[in-house]
Every structure is written in structure tokens, then in C-alpha cells.
Length: 294
Image (cartoon, rainbow, N blue to C red; front, top):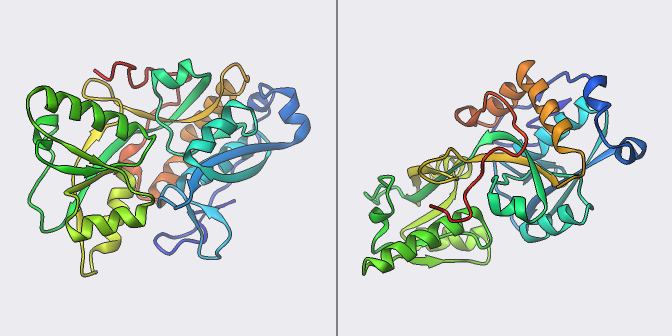
């Protein structure tokens, strides 16, 4: 199969992925009978390359997340049915069973486990700060370095939860951190370019991608540091997400481990410039971002 197809920033790659009967046998019968793996991606209304984007053919949903879902479906001997949704609707459809699995840069959190979701990890979750290239500020790994700043973040995301917690800590110390939400990513980038915000707190892969894309434009940006999506004491993890007790988490993890062990996983992440976020092994329901966020 072809991954990284219909992109203008990387080279399409042909990968051979066989059906693995021993793993397929663990997939719930209803899904096997249907013959498809319904994969949810939360890429509406705007794409977040290199994770997900509408391809150069103006119709194919491509990116590292849907492509990994397609590889996993191949291991399970299923036809991938990739469907795009809003971030909020992605979770509604996962919990209702309309989506079998979400491949959409979803962070493992303990709160999401209590909300009826299960996980099979596949990538490190690192968040990043994007600033204008001429801005000398850098995140030093502590919330104190954000004092007095105005930072944009997307509503309903893990990074928003972290940022609001930092804002509360700063307020307790008599300091300020203004958190801004915009309707879409283009509005956020316009606010950054005009100086209305100091930084954008966002998944690290997209920060790196956007900084590279703006390098030769009148408004270049850069990465100003990163942070684990699970906080200071735990490496955050991104995971394939499914409804709890659906019976899918284990075969998803085994399929990902097959791809890791046989090299397709490393080639996929390299194609999208994400090699620094590889994991050695997929785990079912690994420790996630604590509910207390401490």
C-alpha cells in the first residue's frame, strides 16, 4: 500500500503489509463479518498536517494518523473506512460505536479511561510552543516562564487542560497567563503573525511542520520548546482509541507491534518527519495524563 500519498511536503512510500491471521482472530466477530475497520479522524474543520490533511487530489484524507490506521487495518485483514469528523464529534462517535477506532493524535488520559475509552499506544505525545521567529522567548520547561504571556490553544484538547492548570497556578502566585481560543487554525496563525498572541501551544509535530512551511515567508515562525503531553513526570502517549470493552484494544496493540517489529512503523513515521516520537512497543491502556494534572 502507499503511504504519504497526495502530499506536497514528503515523498510517497510503498509498504507491504500482510494480513496476520493470529492477530485477526482476536478481532470481534461483528467487525470481521462487516469486513471494514471504521477509522475516525478529528480533522474538521481544518487539517493539522502532518498528522491529517486533505491530500493534493482535494479528496483523499492523508497524513500520519489515517495512514497508520490503514496499515493496522491491513494487518487485521480489514478494509479501512477512514472518516473525518470534528474533534468533539470524534469522541461522541467513538463512544457510540460508530467509529471502531480513532487515529487522531489522541492523548492517553486517565479521565478518558473513566469516560469509557480504551487505548493502544503508538507514538510519544509531545506538545510544542510556536512563536514568531523574531520572538526571543523560549519555554524553559516550567509554567513560570509563561507569566505575562498570551497563549492560544485549541478548545477541548489535552494541551488546553495543561495550559489552564498552569494559568491557575500562576494566578495563585499573583501572576497572569492569558489563554486564547480561536475559531480555527488559520485565525490562530493570523493572531500569531500580528502579535496579538505570544505563542501557540499545539502538538509538536504540527509546530515543526508549520515552522518549516513558513521559513521562506514574510512571517516565519519557530519552535520555542516542547513539553510532554502527560506532564512533567510522565511521558505522554498518543494512542489508537476505541470504546472500552469493545474487544479491539488488544488486537490494535498487537497489530501496531507487528508493524513496529517488521519495520513498516519506522518507515511511516520517517516519511512524515516524526521519527523522534517513536515508541518501542504499543501498550494497552498505559498510564495516562492524571486527572489531577499534577
